[in-house]
Image 1 (cartoon, helix red, strand yellow):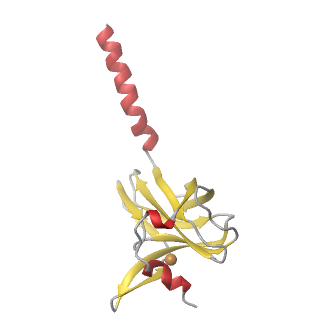
Image 2: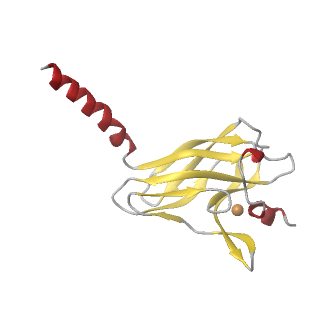
Length: 157
Ligand SMILES: [Cu+2]
């Protein structure tokens, strides 16, 4: 009898996180700190699609910037460039990592300086109607290695 109840507790403990993770998970959203003059910034995070169908991240909103674009970084003639893409597709049971030098979310028209340890909120809108509201943590740029070209493109006037 005791064995059975322990078994049940274990089953509940281990099945709950799986159940809770079903759907879309947004993991470790962060942005880099900016200077007072910066009008752009990057947001990085991991998206897990645990649904049975492929998903598209189609829009990102926040009150901290006028606009948030979905960007990809690519290499052209040995120079890193970035471009806006209309959506980010994540296959069923797949994950995608937005990171410096790769896919990222670009804050355009920042309304507030991003300071280390601050947090701000963004809403990620998916094509299936799901909306994920997450807090983005601001990190010191120097802490993480970054391809400087990722940023220079937007800074070129
Ligand atoms: Cu960008």
